[in-house]
Every structure is written in C-alpha cells, then in structure tokens.
Image (cartoon, rainbow, N blue to C red; front, side, top):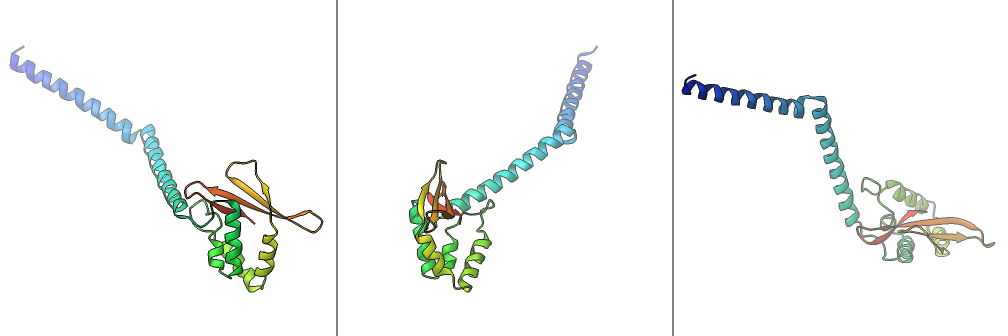
Length: 169
C-alpha cells in the first residue's frame, strides 16, 4: 500500500469510528428509551427545584408571627380585638405552594359578620399551654368550666423566617 493511501485509509477509519461512536452516543442520549427517561427525569427534577425554591422564598418572606408560640397567639388575639382580620389571617401557616389559604380569611370574615370575634377572642384568651413532644410544633388547649378540653390550637415553627405560625384552630 502506498503511504498516501495508508493515510487516506487511516483517516477514513478514524472518521468511521468517530461517526459510529458519536452516533451511538446521540442515540443513547436522545432517542433511546433510557435517554428519554433520563431527560424526563431531569425535567421533573428541575420542576421540583423550581417549586422548592418558590416555597422557600415564600416561607422566608412570611414574617407574620412571634418568636414564641405564646407571642404568635397573643398577636393573633390582638389583631382580632382590633377587628383587623386581614392581619389576623396572616398568622396562619402557608399552604404547600407557598400561598395563603383563603379559607382562613373567609372564616374570619364570616365570624366578623356574625359578630362573633369578641366571643372568639375571649375563648382564645383562655388558652393554656399544652406543650409538645414534637420538635417545631406546639399546642394550646381551651378548657371548659369542668376542666375538659373543648378546643385545641396547634402552631408550627417556620424554620425559614424563624416565627411561629398557627396551624390549626
């Protein structure tokens, strides 16, 4: 074989090997079932990160609440006494998507329309600490005249903004 033909043959062989290699790589990355699944998995992971980042940003911005469960409950009661149900509704935990649950505000408006805010504030003012064995959760209970529990109030700690939020009432 002539030296020039050997070079041509070598270059052609390398070119064929490269085409086959890159063709297989493209096939496995983009067109094979595993490649499609991997791209889908990556897209889902990016969606998850986006949702998680939005949630964390909302939680960090949610600074309505006190440094203690007692302080948050007191702030909530004060807002109700002043008739500021908009503010009072901000002491509740955010939903999983990082938004405020409109049901809390609607429920408070309903109680305001029924002229029951004073009754509720009087009831909440009788809340006694029930504590908690679960980290970042705290409870209060409201007792009747016989010492029986008639209502529970649950709070949870927002680790992002370092405030206590009302979880259940």
